[in-house]
Image (cartoon, rainbow, N blue to C red; front, side):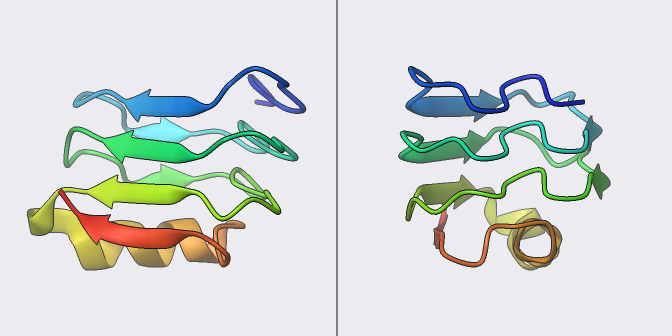
Length: 86
């Protein structure tokens, strides 16, 4: 939890293909993040406020899980993000 909270130099995040869970406030209040890329389809849980950011980051999600991941991320703080199929 809170792994990259308030990080000031984390601009791009690549979530590996075997990641199953993103913990609470993992990327919370990150003001510089501009790109998040999901490489796999195993993500099943996203912690509270995991993506609480004011920045309009671009999120790339595999087509197979696009709708499911988008709902998970929006629910956990990614309302301002723009979503794209990878």
